[in-house]
Amino acid sequence: MEDIEQLDKARERIIETIAQNIHLYGLTPSAGRLYGMMFFHREPLTLDEMKEELGMSKTSMSTSVRALSDLKMVERVWKKGVRKDLYQVEEDWYQSFIDLFSTKWKGAVSVHKTAIKKSLAELKNLISDEQTSTDVIELAREDIKKLEYIYTYYEWLERVVESFENHEIFDLVPKRIE
Image (cartoon, rainbow, N blue to C red; front, side):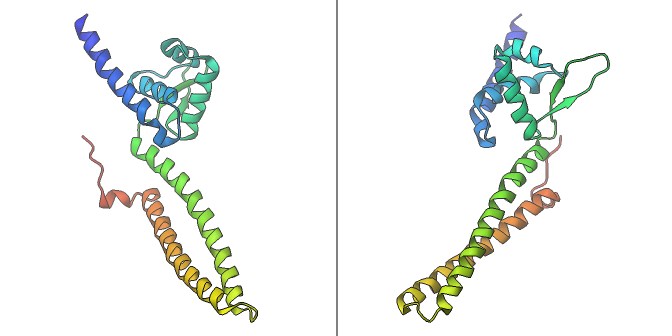
């Protein structure tokens, strides 16, 4: 009996650590506990089985599973003879991170580049307007330099995201698969 207690203790430590850090993925600690619990299960689980194991409400469980599924950390699977939906952890943590990182940063880069382009156009129009004072023109030119700098940053960030999506990142930082 002591062996199983040690096993449970080791697993619980990891589950709680996942729960503490899952906010990095934009998820709640309860979703982290669910993910951690599912990680240690050999077989896919139904929502009822998850609810029973964690003591969460079915609504909370369903919300957490949906959030994990949206991030491609959990997937629905089919099993012959089972009528309820079954879920299991996506085993490729590298791809899960890439999916999350790419989705979040692609959106942010797009929003920033659009805003920068719009502001650059407005500033350039301001500079070319004969009515604009020399003080404002000077400030606008400084702002243009700053915006051009951050635009190049977002172009670089776009290339970083691409290196994750096409797995070139693994040429720079290889996976350790043991």
